[in-house]
Image (cartoon, rainbow over all chains, first blue to last red; front, side, top):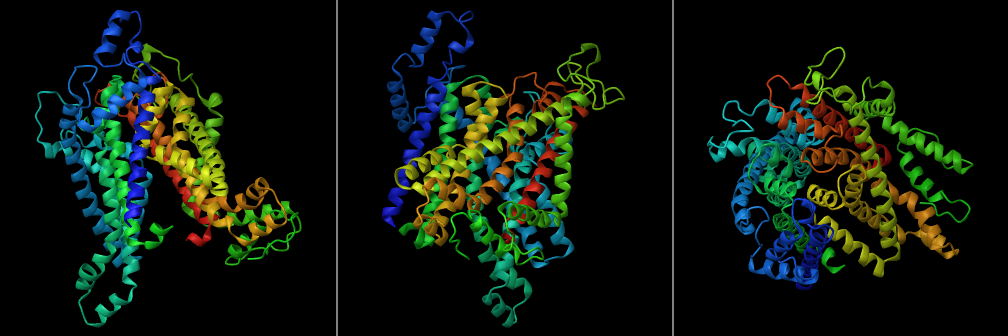
Length: 310
Length: 320
């Protein structure tokens, strides 16, 4: 087991380093961020000064190694536009994204688990068919379109703040987070409902459930106590991965609702060619992604000896 | 499973699988088919018979067929050039001349929508073909050869799969500049690793099977074994994955365009239209600007998703 963990860890570290290298090549080697503004608007001397200010006058391998080294000390550089520390910018965007991810997860677990249990317990009933139809639609309709529809129809109404809003308008965070969270929750809730229905149906067929019923336990206890605990396992795995993906930034949803999280920051930085911010945010998203898939692999290996021995 | 002893009988392994699956269904017995051509036809007929039973999939297929016809006829049936501006006639609500209204620049939205449909189908299809071709080739190489090639291809897929889909696509498009070919390139770059992994898994399990061993023992070359014996049996999951990728690609292109990355700003593209309709124009009552393109994306992806589901069930009845 220890050997497997070490091998998997080494692989993850290599992937992250290779990804940053690829990112660095894409952002700094295959395009000069200052030349893109044109020679006519920025004189070459100014460009040289800018390059020096951001450490881009050194050789490319040197720049990359400096970047990697700074990554470990938490120094992410300053952004091109306002010379703010990138770590500070992420520091303000990340809590907002974390709030959004959390609210979305709570919503989709609540809706998904309840719908899944109802569909499994009352199999082939009206409710089951309804859940099947709704999940098919929710998975089929892209999140992008759901976001557009929600923004154009319900934003600005009741407790949902209107979507482009002026700077002066102050909105409490729980109101601001509501619509983007619902948008993100739709697809995940549908997946969770399907997972839950499937695993619940499987568990309900097992012997220990029959035993529980034979003992004379009420149906409520059998389902909510005995069956629930075993059928929730695949949902937990799914939720773990989903949180990671959401923390990396929901580009479309955050942009649609102009929610100041990591995803919206990334989109804005891309449109402004703000390379240090892009570099940092994408590295962050890759880190989370790779870390989570490593954890999942290790967990599976822990549960199933066949994987770690092969 | 019957092992084919005759090297001339190349499609035999595929046939063996078919006989197994066909036994659950009423249909012509396949093991008597005299020529390869006829076998092929009955295989397709069998898939089609299973597909037809799925009403949702058939509805999806009809919608997809209508869309393909509309996209092919686009230059003929559009009353206006989708790029033609007419500033005196901007933001017209839907009327007899302009069925879906006109945008800020006075361009006819009905023509624009059809142009966008054509674009979406081209991008979806090219992405599917591209990621399937590369994925099958590299997955087969990695699974059949093993060793160095396997390690190399798998590490490269690890690297590409480490990027979240949309972020990766944006970075590729940003590096290579905006345009439709660049979008296709980006989506293929992010799509092939999964296809390659699926292919590799299939090849690994088939490589050790008896009929491949038999082919090897009579001296068939590696290329021949992979192309004629393994591929027909291994391709199904990759094909289904790639087909599902069409819808994903269409949404990805619209999302990129919405974010301002990808197609050039004046292209009539659905995501671009939505962006214009909800970001740039904020006049009450101009809802037609975003309703039509968002409904189009929705219908397209749903139709393709239904067809993909039906295909999955029809190609592999064991999965049900």
